[in-house]
Image (cartoon, rainbow, N blue to C red):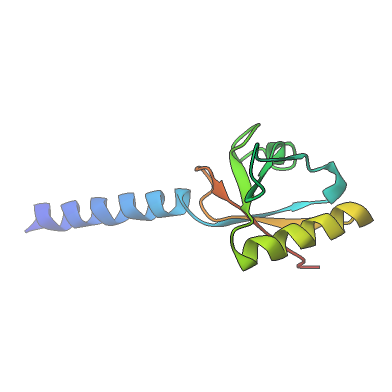
Length: 111
């Protein structure tokens, strides 16, 4: 019985740590004009972001790990928001749905 309780506790603790590692993550870029991006070669459905780790060292470094998906309404709205913030040199919040993995990112204006 005690062995079963310990096994369940270990599983729950391990799950808690692994879920935390995959948690959604927000970070702030103080000047959006510093974000570097490149339009995917031959298509306009993805905008790759090059230097997000410059603003938060816990996200994946360098090139092409994160992108804006322009094939969706949300992606097009995020691209518009980013361009407006870049033009104005204002701060922007970046949302990474799965911090240690590559994927689409989203932006917010949280004040």
